[in-house]
Length: 411
Image 1 (tube, helix red, strand yellow):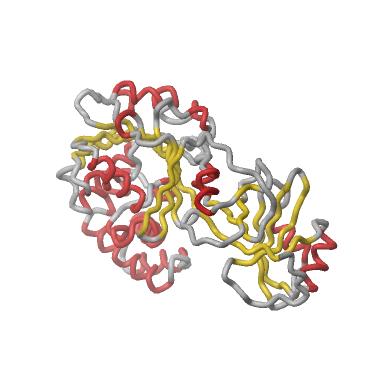
Image 2: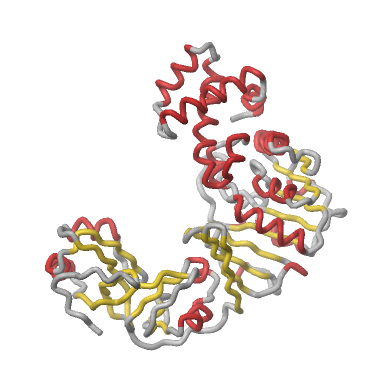
């Protein structure tokens, strides 16, 4: 998608092509045959380039429903832009936090298709959204206009370093983490665009700075006195957010979004969790909890302890419902070698097996093939280490009382 293609889609002919493409995608699902759909659009009189661009948008809009809801059908996307865009529930929550801090004007550096800038504008903030890519900037502007937010959201195509930040209350920066040439992910912060040296220095210029980063960010890079928050949506860790200056309210925060509910766990990130033994219930903490180093705080919630100081599985004597992790009942320990494990699972009639692992070099898909499962029962197999010893624990979701034949109960 380039600027000319976007302009074409916003023309009367483009709007008609988008409507026709949406109808094709709706009838055939997002997996519609592109060749057949393109042929149908050309037969309807649309130019090949316009038909192709419209069909791509229709497919992307269908996929974008998971992130943007009904607004997705009015917006414009690129594949990469959609992949990198913040989910609306996360962006709206961030915007609400900025609005609650009394911020009136915010500059969004690296706005992409505008997901966060749109959320800021929806919350009532005046937004300057900036992106160095002309197509991204044009798309952000188009999305602001499509959603009726252009009166508060202004877009500029410029390098982040060239933007005057002297008259804003806050700055938000989501540095690009892909190679602009090949589109590959970039893991070295020095190779971000803008680079980490620029990004981390923003708080010196604008105290109320917010950074959106990849979940794998090294804790050593987090500025002193800043709040580092990891966010998961329905169990998927989607980002790390750094809150600087007066916006920082806790050293570490794990935020778990479950549907429309938001749950938060805070702490220092420096407390070691207690260590004990394998007990009847195993908790697998949410990735946001693990990445924020708040396993000790989670352990206190469920009155549990680790069985190995380096493995983030928490064991407890009683089950508990918590948005910060899944709870399993430990049924028994099984032999770890594949042949013995296969025999044990077949004896128990287990044909459907969820495999979870931490601390062991096992590929779950390959192991599942090697186990050659058969039977009508289902269970969860947790592969881990307990005091350096490889351990296989047969589990089931807490509260599931379905019988397993051949089970030798541990408890």
